[in-house]
Image (cartoon, rainbow, N blue to C red; front, top):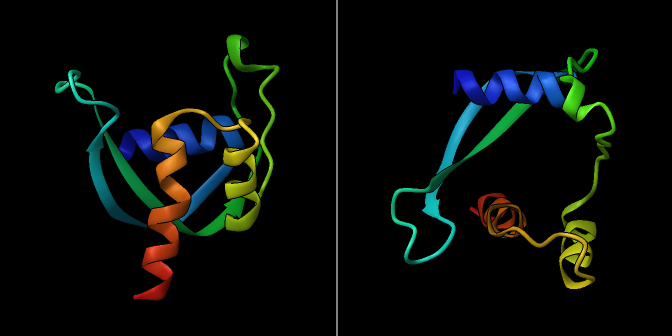
Length: 95
């Protein structure tokens, strides 16, 4: 979770007081060595992003789960880990 915390702060400026491991999965069959951990960060505090030179044009925005699904169906979100996130988050909320 150390790496995730560093990435969160670097890219968004956010820090989290609590972290929860949600899931581990692979992006696709045939790539068994490339897995992803999905983490839930809560009790967030806003700071200043520390983006690298290559990430300076990155944008960040907060979206609701419904808006995230709309972005998936509109083809704005295309990568498997990000597509899985709203579904896993919604399942966690219902439990």
